[in-house]
Image (tube, rainbow, N blue to C red; front, side, top):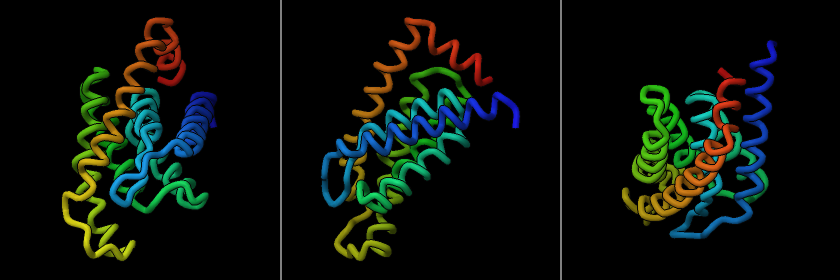
Length: 169
């Protein structure tokens, strides 16, 4: 394994840890636990590491959050779809606003809609409707994306963002 791969795995592991610890600060809304820190991590993972890593990180963070009792099964579709779309859009058009939009649309709209069958079939929530989770997911991901705007702006001003990207690509 080369040093670039080790760096990527190390950053991915650190970001997953931030997402799991950050889920201690979740907001219960409509049967889900909204975790804005996860959405910030999705954007950072997509920008620093790309769509595959961001998707994998969202899966691992969701799994750990569920195993530790800090999340629900709804964490899987919400965070994974948002992370993947964020990463794919940023890879196609490497502009930070594109990444933010990808995260908000991917998690808020697509992830919220994808949570319906998870809630209905796996969580035995027959009263869930198709758009039940969209408002809460949109709020959570918008807050998380806003936090990532602040973090990436600070990293950009100090040249750390370009150094991290240079070390990984």
